[in-house]
Length: 125
Image 1 (spheres, rainbow, N blue to C red):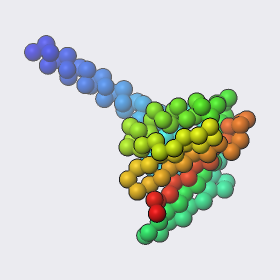
Image 2: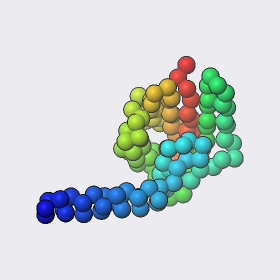
Image 3: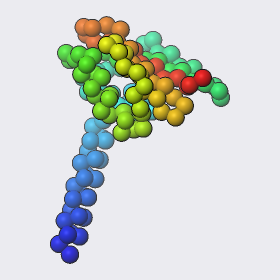
């Protein structure tokens, strides 16, 4: 009986922790379930969105509002995105790519300071 009580207590703590983390997490507009790194903000001025029955393409720009390196940026997404079903497909010094089902998600560093990262999501052709 004590094991059952401990299990229920542990599960309720986990759920409470998950809920508060989810509430604090911001997502990138237009990218459904891609979280936004806390040190970044989304600049939607030049966003590109193309969507039809066969294909889609979305592009936006993230800019750091605190000193953030591209390696820190990559570490966050390499840790977070696999939990959402994304698999790393390619990584270079200035880019990071993921695949999930029929989608390709690409991050490309476009400026060092402040860090600017272009993100695009497209269908695999």
